[in-house]
Image (cartoon, rainbow over all chains, first blue to last red; front, side):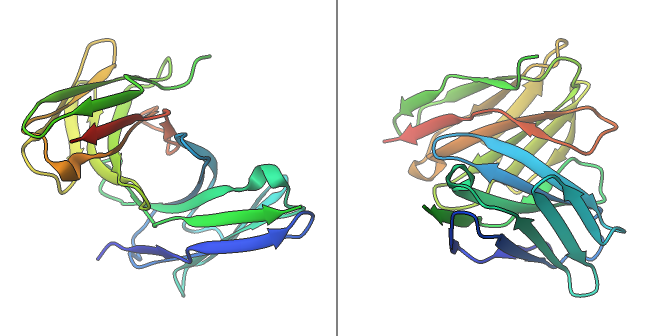
Amino acid sequence: GEDVEQSLFLSVREGDSSVINCTYTDSSSTYLYWYKQEPGAGLQLLTYIFSNMDMKQDQRLTVLLNKKDKHLSLRIADTQTGDSAIYFCAESTPSNTGKLIFGQGTTLQVKP
Amino acid sequence: DAGVTQSPTHLIKTRGQHVTLRCSPISGHKSVSWYQQVLGQGPQFIFQYYEKEERGRGNFPDRFSARQFPNYSSELNVNALLLGDSALYLCASSFPERVEQFFGPGTRLTVL
């Protein structure tokens, strides 16, 4: 089946690292994504990883993928107050329909 | 370049009415996807269109329909509105051979 789960809330201090976790069930997922949503706004694509990769780094963002455990994480280094938002994990299906399956989102609160 | 644009920004309708939401993709993008995001949840896939053809459909009733025009813009139509249709409706566009989907700011629909 298709299901993506995330913890609902994470609070960190400014300057610390944040780690947001996600698990998925579809072992045939081809790509896994992280999106950011600020209040009242649409979704901003942060990064994505192909399912045969273990890690991808992009400036302050590091994505780790454990395909065996179907676990994905997003690490934000030196977290800033502007990083406060809801973060969504999503997986794509191999059916070529363009369908993305999203988790329920993790609210990241960054305290000064 | 302009991002994905959607109109209107907000909309209030009553039960039983019909609504049309509009989306213009990023220039050069030929695929458009529609998602419904109910408050507190992740987006749910409704449709994807590519070259005016429906390529994928999520688990939504026939009251939901869409189409894509020769300029690749798209409309989402919802008939016989229910209270549960109240949500943020998001449009995303992509190149057909690329995996990134870029989202617009959404249309907030309230059904009274």
